[in-house]
Length: 101
Image 1: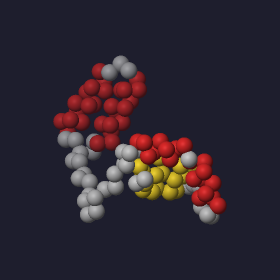
Image 2: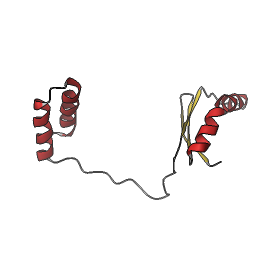
Image 3: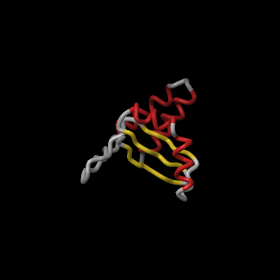
Image 4: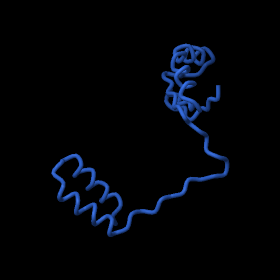
């Protein structure tokens, strides 16, 4: 079963599985896994399994997306002033504030 430890912090273990079936099976044995790790001296409180996870290729980095331009931010700001839905309006304002200036 191809499994990869993605993260381990604060007693929470995150494991990547290449296939959903593997992740599902591992969820079934999670209590046994935690017990075995605890016996080996690890302090594991919970395990999360992510399915369809693939390790990044060695030497490759993610491309950084460019920030939206001033005209895009102006459009988002204008839209936020027209939206009636409070949560959407607040989200649009936060988006504009995060990318302006």
